[in-house]
Image (cartoon, rainbow over all chains, first blue to last red; front, side, top):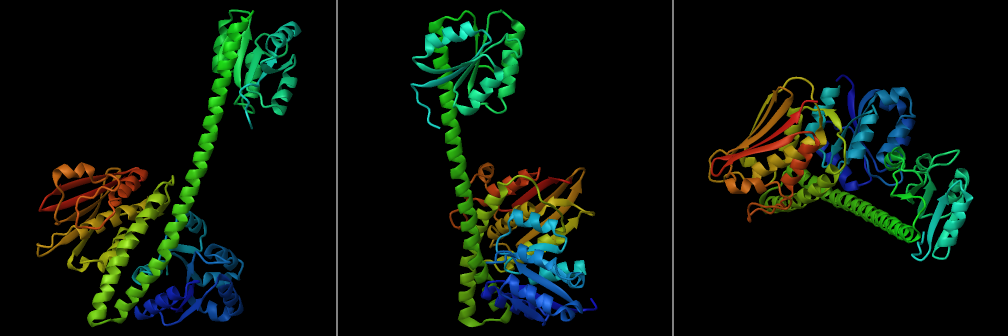
Length: 133
Length: 363
């Protein structure tokens, strides 16, 4: 991968954010990690800092169950952003328990690479990213 | 809709006014009688009233009785239908049963007492059908509510468990020493057990849903994912995992259900490893044969007694006292395999180990 990796964590649970970002750092996956507590915040971030996004390969880890704006709704909003932003994103949905309806929904959305179960398996994520690079 | 036993609502359609009049004269005191000579008016009456029994003459100029029944069945399936005819018309009888789905066939001229009994019987049938419908609706509502409760309870239970497991994972990755390490391992073991139970609850619930969610399956990745899950659970680090994947090509399988089955095989193999053996192993093997994919999980664990093997799939059946499983795992695994169109087989010998096999059709 030529572009720098940036990981974007979106989760309303602060503990999960801390745990996942530390696990990703410890596994030397990437030191560049941004985190957001809500779908709205990440949409604002992506929209406002397009140039910092598009020059990187972004891995978006999006929690499904969040208040106000859930993961899938957030994904719909991402689809409204510029194509350059969308192309720079690899999206994984995260959930503490995978639901068949969520998998079906994710499969219909070409931007989603996979629905992953928490706690995050960094090694699995790494292999999936490599396979889809 | 309240049905008053004393007031049976009857609709009677006949082109002969005389019949309608004499019917009304005979029955109007006991039943609420609606009569008409026109089929369209009969439909109108059905729309505006809660009709329990419909009687129709067969031979009418514009529409036959059977045709009238065929017409009303889609919109008014509940009222009990009875056909009235003066002819020994076998054709009409056959049609009335097959197309008009009638309850009784009444020949003209009718016997008042017999007809009274027939009408009462028809109403009883109507009433019991309606009661059954109501009970079914109540049951369906209760089932849906229970399902929702299981769904939200299991999801809400798992979220905090997952956070705890994440913290433990992090603590292990960052390195903890001494007594703390031991305590964390105990917490992990306990939380893991609880999590397994909650996951089984979720899996059971998910399994009930019909249809398959097919995805291109990478066996190596799935094995690694599951092995990583169990790596830190209660002695799994003593177990040597061997992967042997001899299946080339793309396989579209229901990954979620496949994982339910393999999770189960592997967790059982870890749980029931033989602690007296120097080299406990779990061998995972994938092969294709004709139209099937055959995945085997073989171990050199303690094995299962021959007599107990037929019972291992029973819900909540546990073969040992000293392991704190819930006994639902293999029940779910079997259910999942069957919903993938496949099956599970087991071979086991006490002392030498077990071999669990799932056979799934390629397509």
